[in-house]
Length: 475
Image (cartoon, one colour):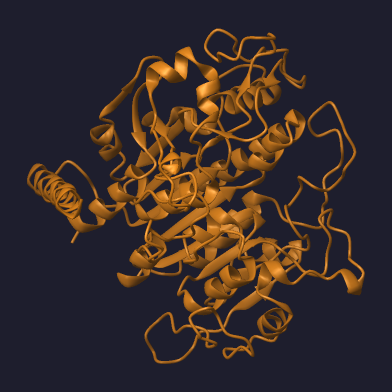
């Protein structure tokens, strides 16, 4: 067993070295100064189609539809749990089974912890892991890599910041549900410059001020940590799992760099331009998601229920985060998550899925506008993808869960498209992947797999591994 594992690792190392040599010698790939990965958690091709039909009345209008690189991506984990039983090992993705037995798509699906870890580190792991390998050892991630080479790094999300996807890009924990431990690790152990996401302890999930007896500090690391964060302290009265209670020095001057906490929408909007603090934690005044839980009322059309105007949009958070990160002349890494697409699909609520997808798309537009007005595509690599499918959305025909023969029905702009959910959880189907800018051609090189319907596809792990390669090529 050890011999086989050694041979496997040797082959991987050999391929990596050969790929680096070829890239350097052929000069094929440009190393990006800035890398922005945008993740619509739980999306699929059907989610994109449905959103385009509602907003534009036709397919193909999303800004990333014009990106140079357009592929699909597999998302399966190494194991569906960390239990040591043979049935937990993944069977991967099988094209024939995926298109002939649609129930098979429900088997072996990833969770956002394993998927996020794969996207952040390039290594597959067990469902529930946060930046840990199969042996529950920490894996180096993209934010750590960028900080190690003198660049800035940040993560933002439309759900709480200690949730699985943002956590995997910053923290290391054996399980995604350990929210307080994860939040403390993000605040105390990491050297990232920006963290933004919901989780405000003083507000409920709809964004209303909570009764003091109902304050929920779990998502931000506990009451003491929250109070220390608000006070701008560099030494917290509580410690992370590593035993550390001191905020990190991120610029090498030997001094801890305190966090500046922002909470109101006005503060987020002001941060979109002008001078910025060195490090920012942005926690909008809502507990779980920016808008998904603003009401429990059922509704049949997207945007039927007014939004909570007291919290920022994901696009506003995006602009604010970039305004902080681009202070670093060496460049930056930013992960942006539209996290509540997944929440809507779990609940099988199509109007809210379209709302969340629209919010995500506006964030993509904000990134593209910044690249084209303040920087250039020669300096930036922008990736737009998901981490897995959720809900298995198809057209409305009953007893037909083939998205190829039962596509989403276009009912015109402003009208809910015809669709149907086939599952309330994640699936193992391929999801869309888009990339544009410096080095993006590397993903065409890595698309070595082929699906009988979707064509060439990459894997989650290819996303960060290509970035690691590009950074090495640029040395």
